Amino acid sequence: MSKIKTDVSPEELAAITAALHQYLKGKAFRIISVKPSPWKYYGRIMSMRR
Image (cartoon, rainbow, N blue to C red; front, side):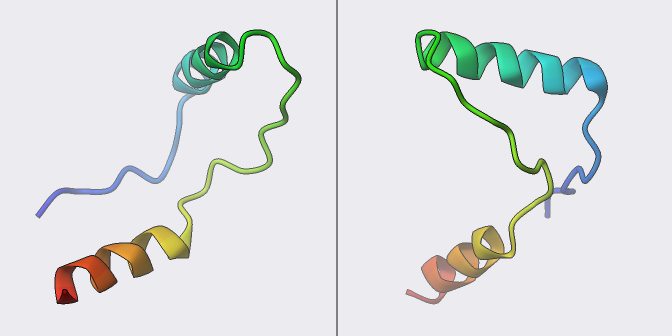
């Protein structure tokens, strides 16, 4: 079982932000949260049940 990382370093956040900026080609965006979403885990459980 893999371990889920719950904290993000400032360097990782800067790298993610830069990647998003490059992907969106300079369009404005706003990061609301970097917390794991419970919907992600729900989706995993539902796909494993199928």
